[in-house]
Length: 250
Image 1 (cartoon, rainbow, N blue to C red):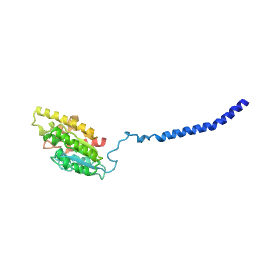
Image 2: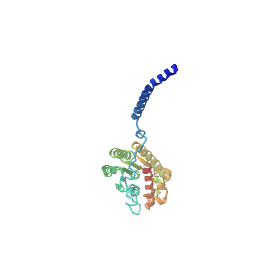
Image 3: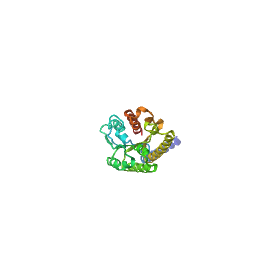
Image 4: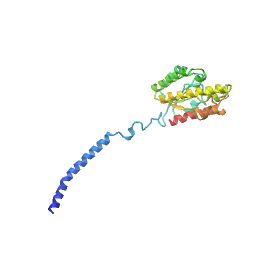
């Protein structure tokens, strides 16, 4: 009995110490948790959409005759730009800066300043075909493209989506070219598209790859207008769909 009594008294003495130790352990644990960043604040685990779901968007389109809608039945309504804009939330604002026949170097002074002044959420770019077929050199074009993307990257917070070159050799407008000339053109198109992709990656620009998957936009006759170069109304629907898939999925 005396031995059991001593053990009981020792147990009573240890209880306060156990409680104190438990309290200290709990405090340390709480401090450790409070110093750890919450899971949702970990860098790189979340991406910011280019516009809030349901919120209005300011959409600026940089482009040439395709942005205007040349080749459609109703230019200004059937081009790929207004068709892309039709997907945007209500009260969104479209600013179509497309100018028929324009090349990229001219667009730097005629379209880019307006784009920078409008605080866009979304920018689409298709400014390459006129330069490619118009004799602009590779070095000159990509110097200008670097300027364009750098200005948009630093001067806006917009999501930027840009299309490359489709296989132009499939178009009726180039049917007079010899097989050798078409082969040479195809090699050049691929070289331009490679560099377009590199610059796009550098500036975080999403690419609408019109060349891949058999260049559907130029391979299907029903997608080409009567002039043999510009998209037809159904071609613009397809083109807008290509753009929208990238915009929605990026």
